[in-house]
Image 1 (tube, rainbow, N blue to C red):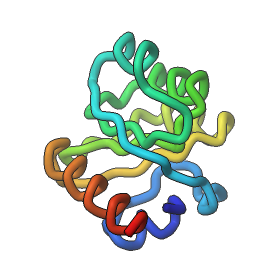
Image 2 (image 1 turned 60 degrees about the vertical axis):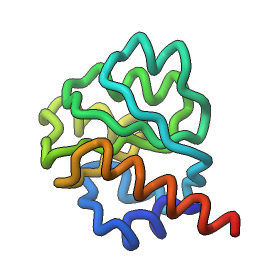
Image 3 (image 1 turned 30 degrees about the vertical axis):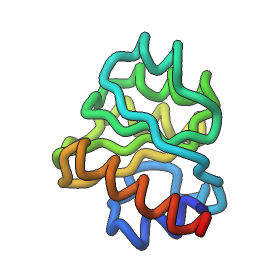
Length: 114
């Protein structure tokens, strides 16, 4: 599924990466531990987290992730958005908790495979 389609279908708010609507999302990955994401997340996955600091961008960029979704209405720090723009890492925001966001992402991606 393309990132822009997910943004529209999930009513996500874009904080960075407006120029990356064609990014392909393969799967999701849910974790709040940077070391866990570094060890286990895979390229083209969309990372669901509540972390908002600048280090999330470095991890997402290093792993080639499709982007980051911040849950529970959390907002990224200013430095995080600035770094994300430089690194071309999309950051999206939802009011949903991680559990619901992951479930909805799972359903959408599986429905697309059809």
